[in-house]
Length: 83
Image (cartoon, rainbow, N blue to C red; front, side, top):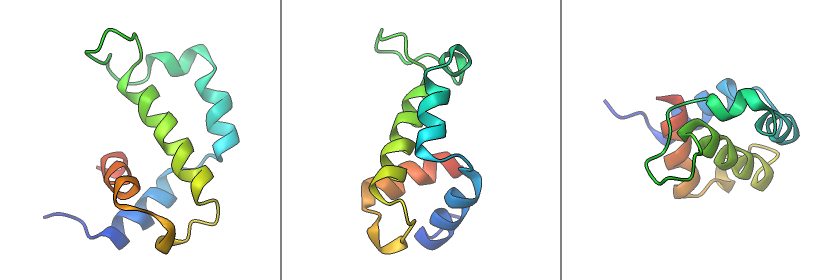
């Protein structure tokens, strides 16, 4: 069963317990480069690292976590994060 957008948003905001700044700092550390599996594009970046960058963009775009301010692309990535 597919979760509705409201549930996805709620779970995302519960699971993502770092601010955009904290996440940015973590992504500069060596530990972050090994989170997740390597992407197939030859970039050397992991899927987890790429996801972290997308999460930062979502947090920065909507710092008040207003459900009305997420677009479909945001919700699609949030759905991946909570699954």
